Every structure is written in C-alpha cells, then in structure tokens.
Length: 118
Image (cartoon, rainbow, N blue to C red):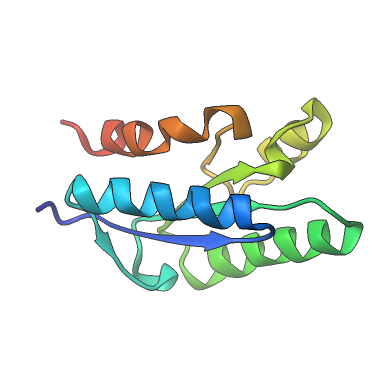
C-alpha cells in the first residue's frame, strides 16, 4: 500500500462510468487510496461533451476542484479530450495538470505510477 490518494469524477454515459470503474479498480490494485477529491493527490475527471451545457459544467467543476484543493493534480480524459480543439482548450486551462486523450484512457494508472516513482 502506498500513501497516495485519488478520486474520480465521471460525467456522462454508461461507457464513461464503466471506464471510470476500470481505472478505479486498477488504482486500488496498485495500492492507491480512494479519498474525497479535496483530500486527493490526484483527481481524475472523465469528461462528457454531449451538449454545450455539459461542457460548461465540466469546466466549472475543474475550476471548483482546483480552488478547493489546489495541491491536487487534475487529470482530464474522456469525450472532451478527443478533438484537437477541445484538447488545446483543456491544455490552456492552468488548473489542469495533464490531459490524457480518450483513446489513451487505459494508460492513466501507469501515468499516475510515474508521478510517484522516485
């Protein structure tokens, strides 16, 4: 067991919910502790971009998490991280530590491991 913590916030469809659960289980197997986002070292946000309202809610959530937990590293993935325009928008948000494209979602656990490897 390590001393690092995570939380996952999921927006959207059953596919996102399933993929977030897969990431969750992988991180638990690797010894990470699940905590509320305001106590987490890492906050993973699995995004949805069905409507402009969903996009706005997603960005508002990122800003809220950063404000309430500025030490947390926010990692964003999901449907919002698909198009080049959206990825560039996300990368321009200073609150976000890393954008992992939706197609690379299965690398999140390994990426997190690399953050804490000495």
